[in-house]
Image (cartoon, rainbow, N blue to C red; front, side, top):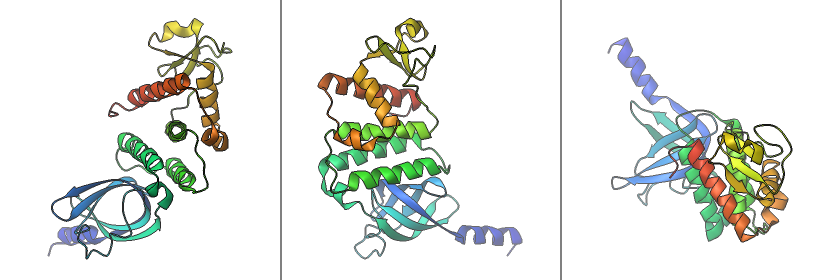
Length: 253
């Protein structure tokens, strides 16, 4: 056997081990499953679990969507194959609560749209685990589930490098009149009426939206999880969130 071929076989057999958060799964063939996993050491990975859906599989209890698991895999020529998994956290409460489970799926969509390729990201990984620990806590009383999701969304954008200006005008740095304030993805945050010419697509918002965004970016979890918001402000927040998702990630639906 030639030396190059031998080196290739050794490489193919080398195993990697890391912690990962499973945020997506797809069934293929009759018994296989492919997991999208945000790992601590390698960023996003797509890993095939062979025969996982068979009832005799020894791994099926330790890896599933919205689990934090320690995983081991082999890098093959074209695919990564799961060889071992040990469940670390299952997040039981959110699995049993439809509204929390819905938030988890929204987070999954954000990860799927934004995480491309293998790139380690400690800040995003820590934020994800902190967030799921919080929403899984069975004593948590959530007043507004969409605000809780937006807590993750805006802080995730922040650790990705999209730092929003929510204290002063993002364009002129002047003080904001709370009765004439706009949100501009192009300018990177809130802008005043005088700077509206820089982004004619900026969305007019109210002072409640600005206050909430400030609380979110300060990571004031206790207030956000207990806050009640009027319908008009809630709708504005959701529109701003959707606009930002489209602006920062073209793959967003």
